[in-house]
Amino acid sequence: MENSLSSRLQMAMRRITGRGKLNESDIDEMMREVRLSLLEADVNFKVVKQFTANVKEKAIGEKILKGLNPGQQVVKVVHDELKSIMGEEAVPLMFENTGITTFMTIGLQGSGKTTSIGKLGVYLRKNYKKKVMFIAADVYRPAAIEQLITIGKQIGIEVYDEGIKDARKIVKNGLEYAKKNGYEVVIIDTAGRLHIDEEMMQELVDVKKLANPTEILLTVDAMTGQDAAQIAKSFHDQLNATGAILTKLDGDTRGGAALSIREVSGIPIKFMSSGEKMDTFEPFHPERMASRILGMGDVLTLIEKATEAIDEDEAKNMMERMMSDKFNYYDLLKQFKMIKRMGSISKILGFIPGMGNIKKAASQIDDKQFDKMAIIISSMTEAEKKNPELIDKASSRRQRIAKGAGVSVSDVNNLRQALEAQKKMVKTMSNMSEDDLKRLEKDPSALMKNAPQRTNKGKGKGKGNFRF
Image (cartoon, rainbow, N blue to C red):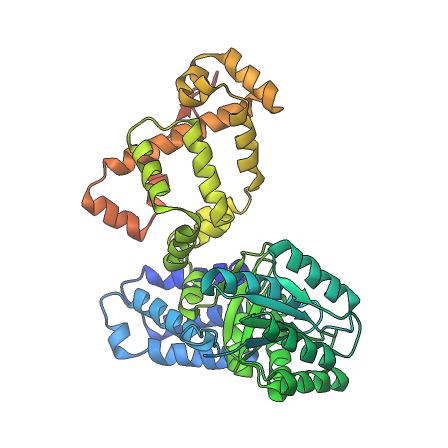
């Protein structure tokens, strides 16, 4: 979603942000770009029409066009309008005050429903400390029951199943079992088909009457674009869904689903999910998503992820080590592990304002590189890990380490450069003034620009032109 839509919108914004003056034709030109970006991202046509009309109306106001920084103010208008069509505020889950809270999940086959149930279970246990149970009631697809049981074993959550039977009986018996065994939250996996049909919808209506769920959560595949919004509307009209889970946001998504669902169906997006891992599940914040789409980053989510993954004392000790100039390969290995706990490199950089260009380059990085570097470090002696200069001084050590790790000497040299780059970056930051740090807050990529460059001297004509 943040690839094609984000880059197109950002390009349209860049054309006006640097200008000291704007007129109506400038706004019209920008709106043409914005309209094309949204239509290409498969956003619902009515949503696009309303969105562009609202932005234009607010952007051509006298206050903005005659303001000090009209370009930036127009970007703010676009940001606020994006936030508005996605729902303004994050909508939290509802829980019963007493007894069991029941969540019923609905969605088409292949929308990622069963995987989302696993992720939601992990999320509830971790963030709300709830005792969770799943009920396997998707009786039309035996693989769905097996998949849920496998996920349940993997994450340590009990799955109630009776195999291929009437879904209504399974749900009734499952809820009684949950009550007897002191479960606080029950998540029901219901029938998913390749398309919506009367028989499936009737079964879902019956299960709803029987379970009386606190929430009816619809899983929607983000890759289906504006079709997702129409599917959501069909479910909502008959079942009155309380929230949507937007899945597969990590794929080649055009973004139409996130910008269409709320406006077309009236269902608020409550969660977003990406990847297969069970921790790739987070609450949907319209404001944060609008910022990500426009390349403004998402610092709040980054802080939340860092807080979850990294212990405060651990981070403090790491910073002290880096500032003391004693940073070695043991510390670098610890740092790799800390970063890996937070997620992929490209995802982390996507949260940081001003890192859009670097993020594109980082998306090419295979996160397995961290594992490769860890293997190289494990091939070093204790003395070498503690004293990096030993490796710097002896090529024989570098050859031995490369052989032991099953890599080339250039891979070992890349690791040495990574360690050196960390040291230089911290040194650069420690010498910065308060004004420099404030500038860095606005544009973190400036740190990369200011980092010292190493120049390799070439041989022959044009020597010295090889730069790293």
